Figure 1 (tube, rainbow, N blue to C red):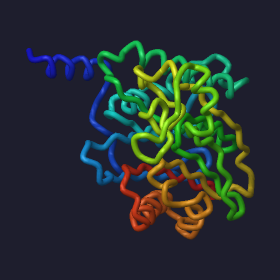
Figure 2 (figure 1 turned 180 degrees about the vertical axis):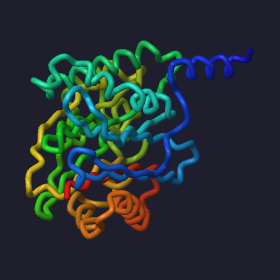
Figure 3 (figure 1 turned 90 degrees about the vertical axis):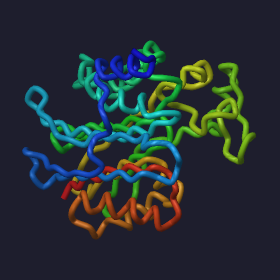
Figure 4 (figure 1 turned 180 degrees about the horizontal axis):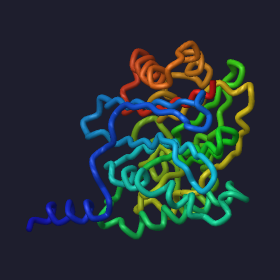
Length: 283
């Protein structure tokens, strides 16, 4: 059996499949006014689509959880695919998730990254950014992220960013303290060791000594002011501000239509990257 076929069999056994559907929708059973929709669009790059999403509701013990995530892969899609299959399971396995969700999400991100690095022969040298949101009983959001995919909530028409853009220029001191460097050569974007344009990510074994996988985690109450949540990869944020994105879809009632429209708006504004987007409507 050829090497590529063996690798394919190993990946299949590890739970890898093809990318999920490129669009879809659903709604909460407990809070039926809460709906979600997602959409993905291939960019103009020469490589295959590297984005993956999770957008679903599930029962866990006596609670309903909304699980939403954008995984934006680079140098291949395998790490993003692994995250789609495993990250939320690892988050919910943490015994203190219900009592200390911030610590649980941080620990799950770090242990998941360790598993990815252990499987680097199968998963390759690539990596992925991530933004995740767990909606608990329609009332509380636990948002974590590494990289530059973003979570933005709209409250009374105003955009509020819940994630942190992990840019190399902002974390230069930490990168240098780990023995790395930040350079704009080649190109004009600051990169870790001149290679990666984010300061935190899953995978990227060759850069891991200089690259963090520790997430920023915030908890946000879904109150009467909350209208909707956007999770999106950087293909949107390269060409739109948070408020631009909110204004673009605030008038659209259907969550899936809103996700599609936001991507189309970004493409109109000359975004050339792969783009993935989830919209969760709270009312």
